[in-house]
Image 1 (cartoon, rainbow, N blue to C red):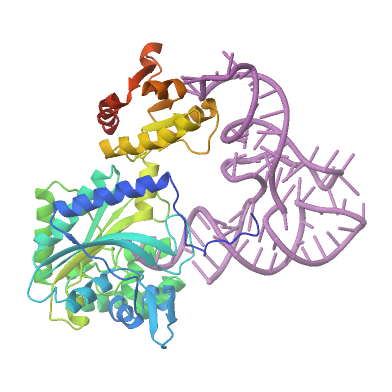
Image 2 (cartoon, protein in one colour):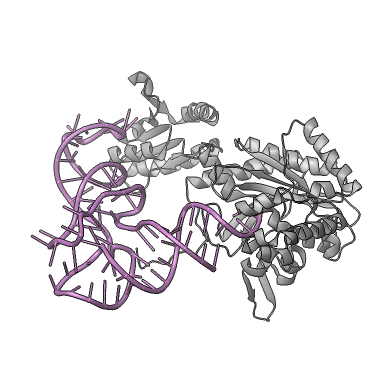
Length: 433
RNA sequence: GUGGACGUAGCUCAGUUGGUUAGAGUCCCAGAUUGUGAUUCUGGUUGUCGGGGGUUCGAGUCCCCUCGUCCACCCCA
């Protein structure tokens, strides 16, 4: 054990039964995206490093110190994607998806960031995301938030807070940034070291500092919502109106900013207090400038991404149970002839009932041992095929779960042709939960 | 990247101020009726005490290094 290989730090295996939750999440997400007319886009995990520098921003933490970057055999600098929005825009431009048209896209996949691992934060992690292109008004911002709200709800999650802010136009943001810097400079002595450093590199990030002293200082700082330009103001008002129309509760948070440079106007986050310091479960916003910045014609865009591991963690914390993938039927056999017939019977039942989950006993064992495996497998019923049953063309159908039934209903003999109907009834019953 | 806690059978954990062949529960396997599980009883398997080095007559217990997990910071989904 000690000598075995270990996985790379922060790169985790996901095992059954947890994978059932992942499958459930994937299914619900695909259905929800489809319900809003979003099409799935599959994007590569590796891109030219320059794409991320250009989109996310040279001086962001992600680009400066968190990317898995390396040279390939030709000497090109490549990076494992730290997020998918840049790839999505690149793919949209490269495939002509963004030229004078609207697009609604979603993606799911692994992302890579070289951070110190922690629960809910891994070096390889997974995101689900949605992006919409070519729509300027707040209606599409609203749609994306409603979509995220529906997804979270359908996953069975609750106690989440939607935080909302607007970063305004780039001009308004620049003006606000200057005002904020000016204010903070006047109180520079009271700033923590990190914030002082950010004063130069990325002053807006000071807004979400956790240092109490800095927080106190920010209480009297100018707020970005007061600095909004008229157009952004109207856009933001429209979005809030829409959220009220749809009954989606939100909390305005003028300190909500993003770590990626391309965001402007609407930004939002779904947060929870049940996941320790990794409380953001879904986040996004508008990035109208990015398409042009990556070489396309000016194209408005909005999107969000959600951390799958965090969603799974929260689902577990809130007791969400995935539909069971455990076998419904476990087929036991006694004796060589019966074993061979059982294999045939198993295949036939799977032919007749395509949704059936049937485990065929393998590796021999006495009947007692086989039934023990049947029980542990989670199956509803065990089928027993021994020499007597083989001769009669029948099996014993033994219920493993109904404890309060009479013994006669717990085990009955059924002829092979009857099995399809017997098990079909079982399928309906167990799909219900 | 910074600070802290932790790392003992597959799993959950106990191992007193360093002292002989390292324990429990669970799981797994076998038996307790010859073809009947989940309950019960009996027996059995499993560990280089995360890895490496050091101190010591003696280290799971102390020291150093290293790897990993977790928490907070940081960052963000």
